Image (tube, rainbow, N blue to C red; front, side, top):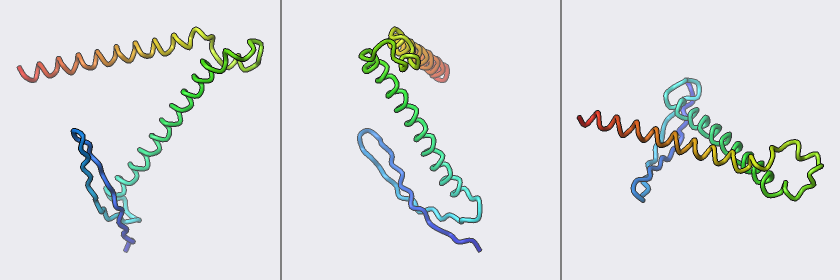
Length: 121
């Protein structure tokens, strides 16, 4: 017979400025693949994805900050310059990314509005 342990999970829901929390005690058998075990595995997968996204964001922020703020004060013949694009791209890349993001967001909102009008009719 497998050993059963209980994981206390707390879920929070933010709704109109108020936080509602629910405590759940889910029994989980260590030797079986139950839906509760899948929930715990998904929690670890979510944490791994969150850590990866945080690491990527911090890396991009550090690279961009060094590129824009520190690199202009380094001599132009220093070897570090070969790891960075020219300074013009420091403005062009974020502007292009912002325009692309706003364009995709506008298209998405337009599709949602069109679909909601079709459902009402």
